Length: 327
Image 1 (cartoon, rainbow, N blue to C red):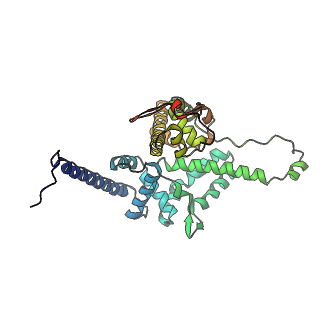
Image 2: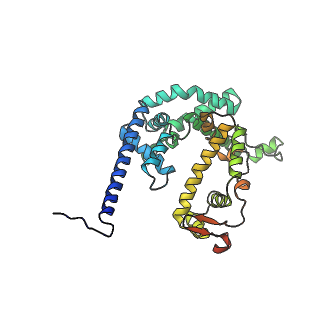
Image 3: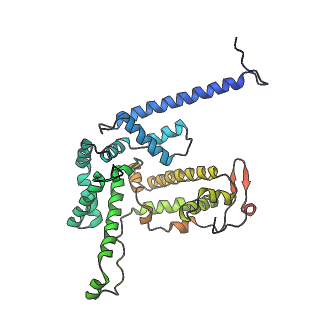
């Protein structure tokens, strides 16, 4: 007869291990059930269940830390706009029915958004029409169709994402047109010494700028240092970890938590300023480069690494030495 390997704690370790495996199995089963429900809610996009699940995995891999629990993954999936995500990705995959639905739902909205950005009807229609090829995916790369819609992740509304894409295309077209004007042509017109025309301003809700400013200003010295090092100075996780004398995975987890926390607090602040949840999420689709806000000034306020603390102890700046430009 089999006898368990009895230790000082008896058979308790075996029981705990079995309970842990059962809990993990139940969590996994619950997540699979949730994905099935989300697929049912995603509508008749033309995607198979396997394709839909693969898209969710791709989006989760982009925004969730490695080793995220089933509960964390489920909470993340619950916040996605799965119907809009499935529609966009089906269009990107070449599903004609999905593209018909997309055009019926968003064609006029695209023209309205373009009119708001371009301020002139013919320019607006040209701007919107120029985007269709990129959205539909008329070009291929390595045998695969290339569609801008493949980059939509469902974290905000599809309409808000389209607004951002159109605005960026408008800026890009403006810059390309400026480069096409030669110096000789400008000289003939007598404007060779004229001040360069500024890039067109993209309408950004001022409440987004105010909310972003408030949230960034409330960051701790440690948080500002990590954000500035990674996003503004381009330092790697390993370089930041060496500076603060902690493990690289600690910095990775910290960055992920910071990104989620920033988004959550900005959304909360926008709602406090009178926006609905959907309006706040749409506003968050704006390109940070279009904010009239000096992000570096708000974030990079430290001349050296601050004290870093975690559950295992505390490391002070004086213990890790001065910060060097080389990382």
